[in-house]
Length: 435
Ligand code: ATP
Image (tube, rainbow, N blue to C red; front, side):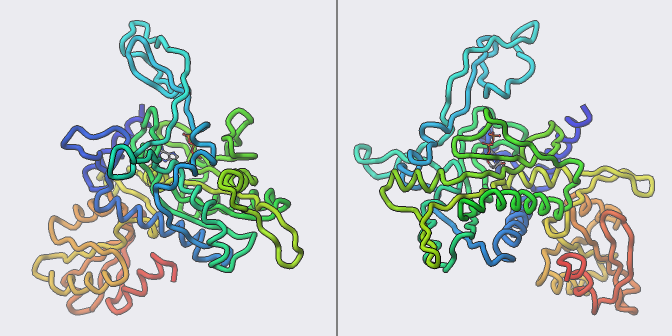
């Protein structure tokens, strides 16, 4: 129950403070779709920037791609999604609700004993369809991509040729994906429109197992570096009956959400499944010939795949904290400074000294997303920022006029330090960016 309570509080905070709203709410919303408000989109951008930095910018063996959401529908025939991307679906004859067979709600609302009367599972394809073309007759049916990686396979040769990369190297992409989930649930955990951050690493077949181990560790460490509690992370290895049709070996990094342990990120050994499938279906050769050894092979692929939305939920769940300061309850988000939507808030102690404080805020704004707040007592202003995860608050008081110093207060410890205005930007830079 306590966990349920946490989730309810978190959802309310996200709604009230402008992180996440139900999509098209005035029309009653639409199940499985969400909008991200002012703070939500800042946070998402930070999540994507942190991933991109880690996966692309700091590495010489990784490059980026931004492909179209809709591809030639043959893509999804070759990838096996048209034939295999199904979830088993069951209906309850009593409450008439529809479930994914492995996610049936524990109680039937229309049966006295609470037991569902379920139909046999039917296969349900999760790809969302659309039609392209002006006239009804000539329009073709296409799919909204169910995962971002297929275009990485399609563009593999182009990218390799134009970026002077050769195996082992990786292509990374961030973009929207769509799945007609049977039971979207748990807030943004499982939605029908979501964003993925995927990386496909192309390597000689003999190196695939080593790269697989390497990226398992690399990804796990990157979650720890964002401040996620290690006690709430664990590995789950896919058994033979769980493996997707394109996988030889797969591990999930799971997170302990308030609603239980669930998948957070997937690390997959896709061997040469995709490149071979596209090669056969398109008739275009997808092999690589090593110019030195003349060895010709279809590269094996190691994939890391994580949702932006799911990362956001993980970070919000692990940051959500309630504590007491000076005998008063407070809610705070212990987000790492790199992820927090607002990095610093500037408060003049009184409206009379708003102007010099505003100048400080304007200066900081050039480097960090900065808030300026003049209303309410200082305690209330601190609480407002704590609740949205702002790591630092700067107060300009009447002494600041004479000593040219301000008080910097840290969110988690609530400790305060007096810092000269001249060195404020450098001080915050060190704390927020680490340099
Ligand atoms: P499941 O079995 O839970 O439906 P999956 O194993 O099919 O998920 P993958 O195809 O491995 O999921 O997707 C990779 C990542 O994309 C997931 O780890 C998750 O972070 C994200 N993701 C997948 N589906 C959704 C969704 N419906 N909503 C939000 N994020 C998703």
